[in-house]
Every structure is written in C-alpha cells, then in structure tokens.
Length: 335
Image (cartoon, rainbow, N blue to C red; front, side, top):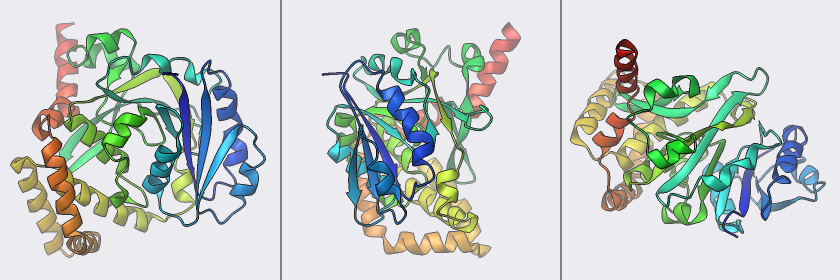
C-alpha cells in the first residue's frame, strides 16, 4: 500500500536507550492504520543491545558485524526496508502516541523529498528543532538556525508552496537526521546517505542539499513533535575534540563536493587558507584527509554537478537566515 511505512532506527551501543524509548515508538506505530515495520539496524554494538532488542516482538533487527557509522547504518536500513515511505529515527527519541497521524499527507506532491518534524528537548520540552535556515559565514555553510510556528505568519508568506502550506507544512532548508520522513525511491536516486561523512556529522545536510539542488522540496511539520534526549547518542561515543575535528573535516568535504558557485568557493578558499597559515590543527588534519581522498571527492563533485537543477546562490539566498529576518522586520513594520 502507498502509505505503508518502514521506521528505520540505527543503533550503536544503545543498551540504555532501547528500553527507555523503543516502547513509545512501538506504541505510536501501532496506531498506524496501514502496514508498518520497525527496522532496527544494529551497527556493530558491543553492549547488550541485541539481547534487549530480541525481547521486542514488533521489530525486525538487522545486524552489521562492524561499526560503519550513521550513514552506513541508515543505508543498510534503506536497502532492507520493505515499504516505500520511510521514517529515519534515532534511538534517543521519544514519540507521542499519535505522532504518525499526518504522514500520509506528506508526499502527495511528487516533488517532495522529505518532511522534518518539530523537535523538543526530552527533559524540558524546550523547542530545539524547527524548519531549517542557513547562512554562509567564514567560508562554510552553517545550518544552525530554526524558525517555529510562532514566526510562520511573518516569515513564510512569500516562501511557501500553496498546496503544502494548506496542510500546515512549511519550507525547510534541511532535515534533522534524528527524525525525518522520506521515500525509498528518492533516497535510492540519491544513492542514500554519503558514507564519506562517516561516522557522523553533516551527513543529513549533504543529503538535503543534494535533494534541493535537484529541484525537490523539503518541508517542516510543526504539528508532529518528537522529544530528543539531546546529544545522548553522540556523547556516549565521542569527545568534544573529536567532534570538532569531524565537523571541520565534514564541512570541508561538503563544500568541495557540492558547491559550484565561484563566489562561495573563493570565500571558502580564502578563509580556509587563513586558518592553515595560522596553523589551526583541525584544519590541517582535515586538509590532509581531503588530499588523501581527492580523487573520490572530485568524482562525487562531478556526479553532483551533472544533476544540478537549482544553483547554489538561489538556494542559499532563498533560505538565508538574514534575508528571512529582514523579511520579518519589513512585514512587522508594515503591520
């Protein structure tokens, strides 16, 4: 059936998280009136994750023998999923009972690639994820900005496709990798997550950007809410220094692979070169890895260049946080 859903959950050493969050996911899935499955991809866990997962009768477990990282686990889930509609979900997320009530409306527009949902902090219910906006600063793309429903009337009027707006869906620059809906066909067309970004960080931005440059759309549903135990997954496997290094490396990969506009490339080269001159260790390590993988990066860059339907500048200006804020000020003053 068209609305059947595969819920794909990558897991690595989630012994503490599985009993805390998986029962809520199962309860929400049982409210779906169509066929569904919960597919947990165990990414080489060394704790008691498998033993715990086997105690749940409503899930299917696929085991990876070695830890390949978030993108690799998600791609295994993509290959194994039985249904066309997909929902990618982290192990540290709680879902309300009626979370899946609206997803059948998301993909009536064939140009829709993904729908991301509102994220709240698990402990406090504070908003942490909305529709995504971006900025280009100091040679890199930044996707750390959100807008929420209390800003929608002001910010979204000139940026919304009417049909999706009627459903309460708002345009978004990216998805939150911890919880988003997509389709198997579109994911396969993109060849899934790029495992270049393993073990994690910036892989969902790369995925979303490639989709947008093909002319597809990403939306945000403020009525679907997920509760995220913030950073618990990453904090259990990484330290701040490693996160900083991975972030620098993966943002560098992203620019070399995806950005074609000469203005942004010049900005990147100027700021990156300055950091190398000042002997920034993170940037030197990233530079050396880029050099080692230069052939792979250039192949990916050429592949993406052939698929472009929307140019970098058009996307980065449309979703630029400064432009949206300017729009909000102008609309507010015209009252």
